[in-house]
Amino acid sequence: MPSSSSKTQISFRPEVTPGVFDPGPLQALPVRSESFEQASQIFRNDSLTGRRSQQRGIIVGRSKKGQTPFYLDPNPIFHPLISAMMSAVPTPSATVAAADISFSSSDNSVNSAAGAFTAVAGQRVFILGSTQSENNGLKKVVTATAQKLTFAEAIVDEAAGAAITVKTTKMWRNGDVIRYQTFQRSWTDQAPVVHDHFPGMAVNSASLSYQQGGNPVGLDLDLMGLGQKHVAGDPLPTGLSNASLDVVTPAPPPEMISAAISVRAIFQSGALATAKCSRFDIGVAQNIQEFGALGWLGAAELILGDFVPSGTFEVLFENMAQLEAVRANALDEFAIAVQDKLNRLLIVDIPAAELESGEPQSGGRNNLLTLPMGYTGVDSSLGHAMQTEYLEL
Image 1 (tube, helix red, strand yellow):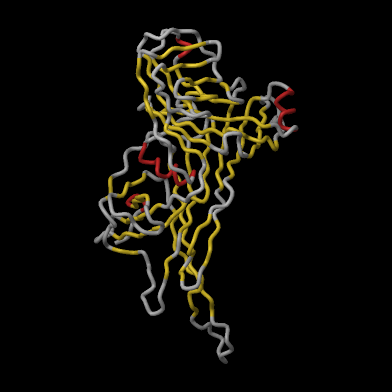
Image 2 (cartoon, helix red, strand yellow):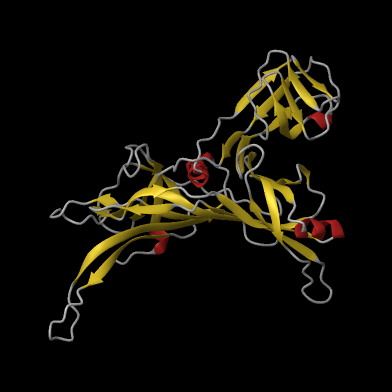
């Protein structure tokens, strides 16, 4: 029977061994569209045969690719895809709840008498329970030990005694190991259901855009895949089957993020942004290279290249210092924290954004001037170019 795109289901599962499905339930994704393909490269026999008709060709290669755009959602089901985008395993979140926690304005710190803190420099924590409102909320750690965390934000003196909770984010920093996934595309209105299998898929690039007045925030992933070792005489693999790889957990309704009502904070230069930001675009390129080997149908290895985040941070043009920073190729820091209706927080941080381009944009008469600052994320003092964090408030 004819298939409807509305009945297409995309599911995935992280792999332990690259290119090999790890038995267990797959998680369905609420994607907005999909574009998966296994495309063969055909060489046509160009021998002179005395006839004008083309001769049959032979497969000389195969590429495996995919695209999965979906709405940005802090839901933990997407976290393996963040790991794939960052090529990193996250550090787990942690909570310290105690009455031996004090605050000091002398060094803008929170202190644990028991030495219970696990946060590291550059990570964020969320503090609850302080009798001083300035001490509560989201803070970025500047220096960290088990006994003391110092912050960029101002802290007010408070002695120990109150029941204080310090929550540390789950955190990804761009790493060095590809995190492979198996994807399954299913056409559920076929009888029997047809499944298309794509093992060994890696995130090669991603794009994320927060834009005032636009659609809900979207995250688009571009995927590339490992090939398969092939022995002459064996059937050519198609990836198609009437059997699912395993049970599929249904996709939850997406908790969409709005650039108007879901933004908790925007940060610039390590503090809350004073300039009004209208657009924050982030593109991630992992520059994965394919290695082809004899006897392989497709790539035998995928090798990470440079991890490069880049994009645009657009603000209302208010003073010459903004433009001077762009023309001086200054280093800045851009970050945004968004929160869904279930109080799940997702933060994306470019800690060392080198400004590269940007001119005030008038757009004609009776328009406010904006300054779209183009940037590339470079290696920061903490050894990474991008950081993503998650916290349940």
